Image 1 (tube, rainbow, N blue to C red):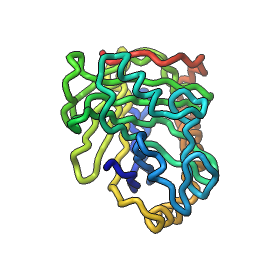
Image 2: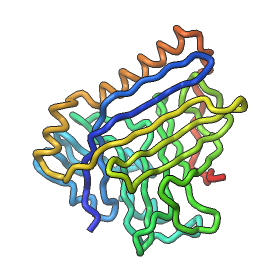
Image 3: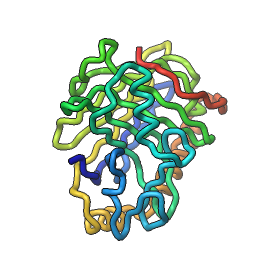
Image 4: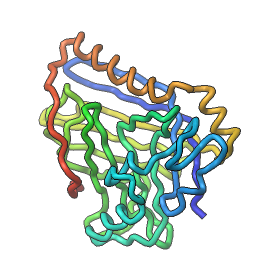
Length: 253
C-alpha cells in the first residue's frame, strides 16, 4: 500500500548571475497517495476539510475541487503512459488553511512499481500555474537521477525571461530523497534549486512535531520569496514583470 509520508528537509536556491544570490531554509512537506487520499486523515490533518494541517484537491490539477485521480490519469493516457500504478503527490500542506506551493511533484508509477512519469506543477506568486509532464520518449521507466529536460513555457520569477529550459533530476532511492530543478537561459546555467527531506512515518505525533518546529511554514515560504526578490533588486538584477498564465501542455524535450 502507498501510505502518506511526512518529510523534514530543506529548500535550496542559488542564482549565478548577473549577481550571485543563494539561500537554504528548512521546510516540511508531504507525499500523499492520490488513489487513496483519505489515508492521510488524522486528528490534526484533513483532506478537503479545515484543520491545523490540511490538503485541498482544489489546490492542484484542474483547480476546481474535483477528484484528482481521474485528472492525472487522463494526462497520462493522453501521452500514451500507463495510468494503473501508484501516483504520489508531493507538496506543502496547508497550515492554518493557507498554502503556497512553488512546485509540486506527481510521481507516477506503472503497475510494476517503476517510475514512468513525473508531473511538475508550478505556481507563481501572481496566481498563475503550469504543469510540465516529464517522461521518456519511448515510455520506458525513468532511472533514478536521470536528467529530464523541459522548455520553459511559464513565467515564474519577475527576474527571469520566458526562455531557455529546465533540467529536472529526481533522486528518489536515497535515504534523503532529492528533487533538483536547474534553469538555463541562452547564456548557460543561471539558477540551481533543490528540495530534499528525510521521510517520517505518518502519525499525529510526527505531524505535530513538524508543525511545532515550523508553525509558520506558509508565511515563511511567501516571506522568503519576497525577501529574496528584494535582495535581487537591490543587487541590480533586472526586473522583468509578470506574464499571463498558460494551460497544461507537454514540454519534455
